[in-house]
Length: 180
Image (cartoon, rainbow, N blue to C red):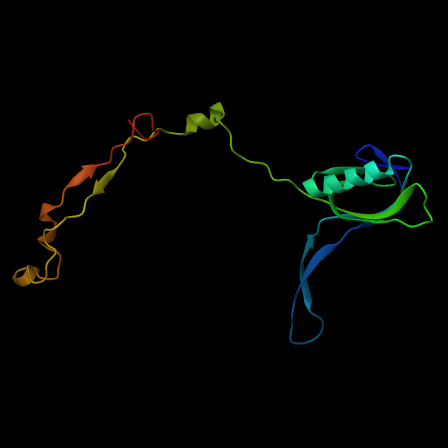
């Protein structure tokens, strides 16, 4: 007997699958060149029967695990951890107190966040506080915007337009990591 998340099921057939993706590059003559191999996710197909007074509960548990997308651990002839990607049941008169089923599982990798609340001391020592917050130029409003206001040589070259512009220092809110 095998177990699926600790629940006993009778498995008649296990079919693990180990596939890879091979890229091919076409050439003028002869066979294409294969230059790269990448492993695909492993899969496991199971078929068997679920019998007994708790057969309906076991079926509902499997469907609930699949719907929620929970990681399932299977232990039988082979051990496998992954998601349930397919489940089908067959209710015939041959099995009085249960059902036959087929199930497929797929290997998954779960990504984890690299965010940390505080940096470790060696890394924290390398981070320098910002000393200068920089400057910000403001746009002129109203002055120098009309056509034909420039005189002589300065026309179209941009000279004389910037006389009224001021440079302001950027101010940050108190408590901001960039505030001084």
